[in-house]
Length: 501
Image 1 (cartoon, rainbow, N blue to C red):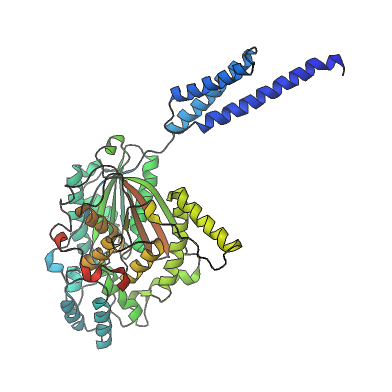
Image 2: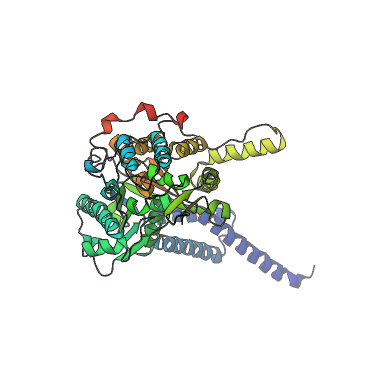
């Protein structure tokens, strides 16, 4: 070998060592870079690497020490930058559920009598609705608005506004009183109602009634169905990520008088039988000090939909019948379409929240079935390994039973859903909050527990929210709680078994 080439070779080897050391150092520092790492911990990693280099007799070259310091500085700056741009946590300060007055209660016998007195219903329609209500799992204490208790029902704009004010204003008052806030403290307002979309909007009605600030960010969602509650939370979360130190109110409601159907088509009469009065309001915030006083922290939201598929899209649609009467058609393909949507949604959610052991069990069972045991069953992960409480759609006992079967839930897991359906009926997007209120009143939610809220609506679309309880809430759950005067009567054994769905 040419002696003149030796310095070049040594220089090349030195450069290779420097590059290798730089990459390995960055990899090791990155491995130890997480949200809880402190500068001292990173410095200890740096010193351990320096000792390694001294052991390898590389200390003669000052460039290695400079390289280590550069790596430390670069990784630490990246860490500080990542934390600086991390979105603030979103907390649920409190929530309120509307309980209608006793004058709006509608026992089954009164429902049949009332429906029989409505000229637009023939005897076959009344008989069909009576049969559906009797087998629906609804109690004798569900509620309808005053406009629908009139004979004939009052289904015009003025009554819709009256119903909205009857529900929304007491709900706002209760929530603001619980949180000890003024309406002018609210920065974001999201209101959603599927069937009724007036102009000015429902959110504008609230802004007007409470003289809220001129810069309040108000939104009004309509046509989203029973999934709107979770979708409203998802919208508010995204707004809170980009607006610091804010309070957001999300209101879930349904104006039943605007969705009443007065025709003869059975697929449209189902709405009259299952939906009942209800509404919920929740206060969200991203303020740091709220971490000590709030009830829950929002961990994750997820949205999926299958509106791109024509068959699924038409399973529930609002349209006129042959006589020009408006109503929501519920087709027979709704349950299969909901099952496919739920399967897709929970698969994605499972990948994000399930523990690694559950994922591995599923993967191993799939591989075994494909290559070894063709007749073996694929292991379905248990969501109970990650979630302690479930708030499911109260669209009917059949749907609750199918969801429970797919998620491996038992009777206690779906108790809140079945009891909410029994006591209050299907309250559309607000039902999940009555379920959470049920569990709070039973004092089942403990600090550290995870709660899954699942909403499914027309489209079809599915949206879920995962909450973590951040403080003990036993004792304050009886304040203006819709279950306060009847919780001792629940669960009702006759409707608590999901095997009967």
